[in-house]
Amino acid sequence: MIEFAALTGPLPKLGVVVVALFAAGTLLLHDRRKRALAMLGALVLSPVLLLSDIWDSPQLRLVHRHPLVALVGAVIAIALLAAVARVIARHPGVLAPLAVLALPFRVPIQAGGTTSNLLVPLYLVVAAGALAWIVPALRAPPESDPTIPHDDGSGGWAIWVERLLALYVVLYGVQAIYSSSFETALQQMVFFYVPFTVLYRLLRGLRWTPEMIGFCLRLTVALALIFSAIGFVEYATKSIILNSKLVVANDLHTYFTVNSVFFDPDIFGRYLALVMILLAVVLLYDRPQREQVATIVVLAILWVGLLLTLSRSSLGALLVGLAVLAALRWKPSRALVVAVVVIALGALAVAATPRTFGLNQGLNGASSGRGGLVSGGLSLFADRPVWGWGSGSFVKEYRAHHRATATTLSASHTIPVTVGAEQGLIGEITYVALVISALICLLRRARGDPIRSAIGAAFAALVFHTLLYADFLEDPVTWALLGVGVSLAVSPLPAAVRRESGGVRARFRTSSAASTTAP
Image (cartoon, rainbow, N blue to C red; front, side, top):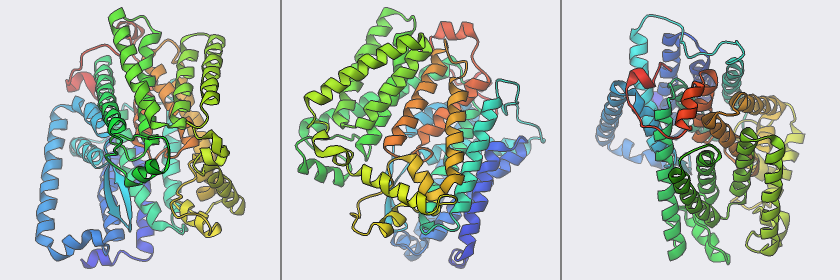
């Protein structure tokens, strides 16, 4: 009790910087034991910082009043964590499908006076996977990790991706010190940057065989179909399973938006768009006719699900991803012709029914007020162009500078603007360099490789979506795509294997010798 109460004043701010350094060490350290210590430090310090932030909040009332019950709950959680870690240690290949299963599911939890939709299942998988790797790594003698790329022309861009990821996380921790919303920055670090850094390292260390990739893709498609089916039920019954705010919004409009198991239609739309891009690669390469027909049917179902979200940003992201796929498969000129045709058809659809897309309300109305958020964010950036207002401070500073703004407004929904306002040019340059390096790393030499093309196109689509919505490094899918994509960029599959597999067709094997290496 006393220990957590003492974590006030400058100690939590110092802790955020230290945990950011631990996360950076997880990305950059070559020695396995040092990396294991950094990973362990990040995973241990994160919950301590979180408890220091919410120790006096109503959410921990049970802990204060019934410490024995809380202790029993903690023991059960640790036992579950140990059990999952033991399974992963014995069968390392199961880590990938477990992560795929956990990626979409969020649980609403109140922390620090706000309700956050947290990826609790994914946290369990990440912690268990880290524990399964940390224990043997600490017991083994010091050695350099063979999965660290060297600047030999194939892994040079991978090095920069990981350096810039580490730099961004550290900058976020340092700039949290002077933020007016330090609690938000702390929660961003604990809930997103630290666990997702570990997730990246775990996925980056896997040897991604065609068998594993094929199994994970089929699992992802199955989830997308289930989520779409839930969306169809929502639309047919005009009922929303989650998110009471969306229920109110649907009551106020003539249209009806679905969100399935996601709390936001745009996040649901993003998920469907990325799955469609990963699956569309099957149609661009020589595959059996039966497989092509099945793929078309699945894409049609997912397309309907995407339309029901009414997410214009997700539709745009889908077009971007398909354009990248086409450019990597055919000559860029042919891909450009296809893109022009698709855009023209989309423009005709919008012109025919502008009310459906909300365009009769003007640009700011059609974007649900995001135009005003962007202009306000640019104004904040202009006031502090070098170092910004501090990590996680956009909402508070925007409302302080625009007092007539409704309290429901949140981030700018344009990641470059959010980064510029919160972190200034220091963070903006790092962000832009990271995006460019990642795109080069994922797309370089990807032509003719179905797997790398699909991952690179999905990442490009995700980056586009963040320009119109939000959540770049706050989305675990970003880190997952980078982890898999960087791993394949450094150690690509042989050409014969790529041709045989088509990037998607193979059986999954859980043999640790065939599927994994140390992260």
